[in-house]
Every structure is written in C-alpha cells, then in structure tokens.
Length: 258
Ligand SMILES: Cc1cc2nc3c(=O)[nH]c(=O)nc-3n(C[C@H](O)[C@H](O)[C@H](O)COP(=O)(O)OP(=O)(O)OC[C@H]3O[C@@H](n4cnc5c(N)ncnc54)[C@H](O)[C@@H]3O)c2cc1C
Ligand code: FES
Image (cartoon, rainbow, N blue to C red; front, top):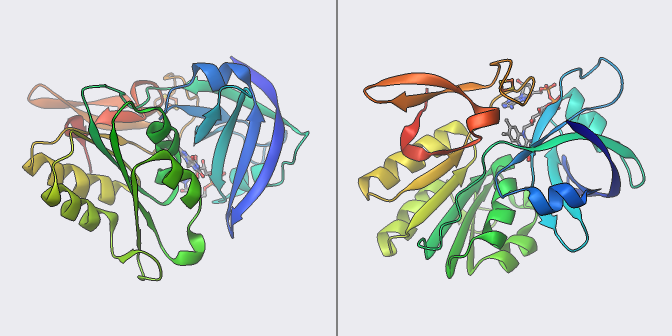
C-alpha cells in the first residue's frame, strides 16, 4: 500500500516549518481536501512509526502534491533534511476529507497552527461562491502561505496572539464577529482541540453546520491498531472511532471533545 515517490522541491517557510513538493500523479488526482498521507521517516528505528501529514495542496496538471510540515520531534526533523531528488515512502491518500457540497454557497475555513494546512486545498476545490478564511498564528514572523490562501478565497482574515499582524486574539473571536455579521452556510475548522471545541459550541448556537479535522498520534494509519481513536456520539451514548479511517474530518456535532 506504500509507494516510493520523488521529492521535487523542499522549501523553508519559517523558522520551524518547511514545504515538500512530491511527485505523484495518483495522489494529485485521487486525493480530496482534508485527506492525509502516512510517511516513513528515514530508514532507521529512530522514528519507527509513520507520521501522518495532511495533504496541503495538489497540482493536478503537474502531478505533484505539497506537504507543509512543522518540526516537532524526531520524525519531522528527519523529513526536514530531505531535498529535491530524494525518495520518500508514502502511504495514501488516507481517511475521509471535507465535504464539498454546492448547496453551501458561503463558507468559512478556520485554522490555527498546523491546522491551516489542509484548508488550502479545501478553499481551492470548494464550489462555494463566497469563501472566507480565518487563520491564526502566534506572531507575525510565523505567518506562512499567506499569498496562497489569499489567492484561494474571497477574503482572508489573520489573527495573531500578540497583535503583531492582523487582529489581536483568537481565531474563534474573529469567527464570532463574522458569524454575527452574516451567517455562513458551512464552517470548516482545523487546529488545536480547544479551538475546535469553542468553534463548534459557537456555531451550534447559530445552528450552522461545521466539520472539524481531528488530530491524534497514529500507528498503522489504516484502522487496524486503534492508536488514533476519538469519542463520537452514537444515539444517546458514545463510541470510539478511528481518526485515520473514519476521519480525520468529522461533523462538528458528532465529536465529543474531552
Ligand atoms: C490527521 C493529522 C494530520 C496532520 N497534519 C499535519 C500537517 O499537515 N503538518 C504537520 O506539520 N503536522 C501534521 N500533523 C502532526 C504530525 O503528524 C506530528 O507533528 C508528527 O507526527 C510528530 O512527529 P515527530 O516524530 O516529529 O514528533 P515526536 O517525536 O513523535 O513528538 C514530538 C512532540 O509532538 C507530540 N505529537 C506527536 N504527534 C502528535 C499528534 N498527532 N498530535 C499531537 N501531538 C503530537 C508528541 O507528544 C511530542 O510532544 C498531523 C497529525 C494528524 C493526526
Ligand atoms: S492509526 Fe491505527 S487505527 Fe488509526
């Protein structure tokens, strides 16, 4: 199920984040926004398990896809050393992506931290006429992919924690203001759990549907090992489900955020 692809480009985006462009006609053509790939990091046992990374964008004509990766630990550090011409071992595309319904004419995509990455291709592919993005960063020097997002939506709003660029504060505060101005048909949220939880609660009050992309450490990536579960509502009760297979994208109202 895994395939070796060639890296076409590796580019530093900010102090700890880089962009890998990988050649794969299959993933460029077959993947849907929100899906992930599961990547082998090096040949040793240092980072034994594969690491899940969202497909950030695809170029269907060139047959390439982009991964934006933030260095967190051993695995992502190994990936940051890859350069053009190197091989990369990839499983995917995996999981369930965002829904792209033409009936959703006004959408808002809300992202924080590494959660912004899967939203880029979502904005490119979504058939809505009115697409807004609200992205959150800690500070101005960490802002990345601003032009790419600006070109993929009608309006881009940026929030920074310290107010060094855009609005000062959290993306959920900006979302609240936007929702109070004009109700969107659908909202997509990806970022830290507290942010997604706050977003879902806000949207519930306004009866606006939303989808969230859940993050959890992963093992197999194909639903077999149960490392990546989250709690999902089921009738009056709840059940565990695998994020790698049934997600990472879920309807906001079905997830139980612990
Ligand atoms: C569905 C999904 C999509 C993702 N998409 C992206 C992406 O597009 N770009 C990107 O940079 N990263 C993404 N990640 C996160 C990425 O998989 C982790 O940062 C990576 O696995 C860390 O590996 P490492 O070996 O570098 O760090 P490790 O050495 O394994 O860990 C370093 C630190 O990060 C924490 N950590 C590791 N994995 C996770 C995780 N999944 N959730 C929360 N904390 C974690 C560890 O507890 C530890 O504190 C995604 C994760 C998931 C589940
Ligand atoms: S990672 Fe093994 S079940 Fe999801």
